Image 1 (tube, rainbow, N blue to C red):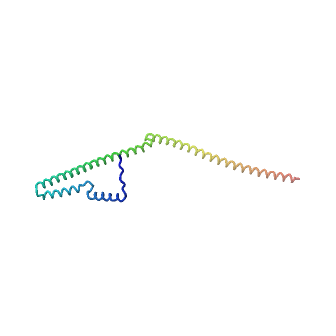
Image 2 (cartoon, rainbow, N blue to C red):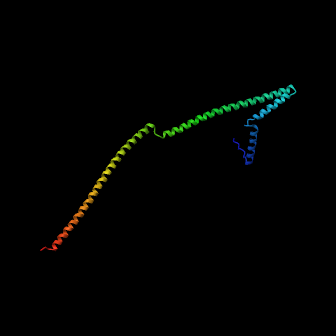
Image 3 (cartoon, rainbow, N blue to C red):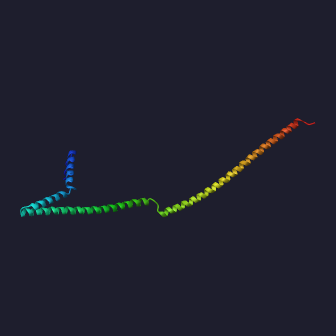
Length: 185
């Protein structure tokens, strides 16, 4: 059977946050190490000032218990520290693998070097072929320009000749009609 979590209003949450913050400030990282060390020092002082043997033995047992707790806490902290170091190394390894995989995916999208060189060589040959065709077309175009120029020059000369012939025939006709109109005795 599930129990419903109690509803916390913003004031309650704020108070809880304040309590947790104060405990963390007092305890350091929250493990109570500072409190245990202070308790150990107080127990040592009480042990040194103890009057009876029973009270001294009781203080001694408390000191051993507190010392054992401090050692356990320190051992636990060292284990967590070692585990964190191993996890960091593991994360770095995983990060490199992820980076490698991402790079491999990018590389797979591109053709390999052999294919690229073959394509480049084919494109070079095609470019050379197209360059020869361009030169051939440019030579042909230049020849056609010259032929067209010669044709235009010839047409122009032919027009001049025809115009001269027309002028000469007009002069001849004028002279003939002048001769016919003016008979000589």
